[in-house]
Length: 114
Length: 110
Image 1 (cartoon, rainbow over the protein chains, first blue to last red):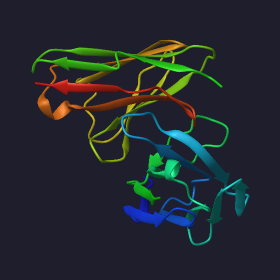
Image 2 (image 1 turned 90 degrees about the horizontal axis):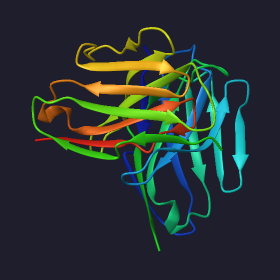
Image 3 (image 1 turned 90 degrees about the vertical axis):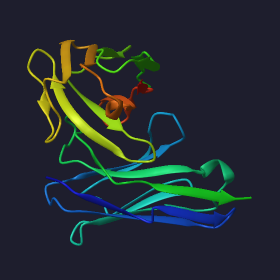
């Protein structure tokens, strides 16, 4: 089955700096890679996603890059703000527009220091 | 966006009892949904995939007789934790698709 590795497990940045979280996956059949933000005790919130036919996607301060050959993808947050502090999870799925069975990384706790 | 509700949000029960968790989609229908379990400070782990009208598919290591899933309609799925033990204490989350997660149920077994 799929195995998703995520690094780092914790990340502290100064407000305004950039944060980068990296993930690798093992199953070449995976073609959908979402990122989630989860605040304590809350449900995961989809913040950005990318499919295997795209190398990069950006949405305001958030961007995701995908290297399908190397089987890794990264989340980039620029101009970080205190409200970006949360746990971020990457995930991988072999599904297209179908059922979205997700394998999650272990998570990165991001702390943005004011 | 679509809304998914989950009930109850928190439950405390005694060891050996059974607990039913409901996951309901309020404004859309879907044939497939997922149940995840999240232990404190850990990731979401897929427990099972259920399809409306058929038996659920369980992930390796998840006991199907302990975690009963009923997906009787396109808008309702239930997870019953039978004979609960303290090690079953966790955060249980349902998911309909890539972004429609339930708010989760915090189960504490004493």
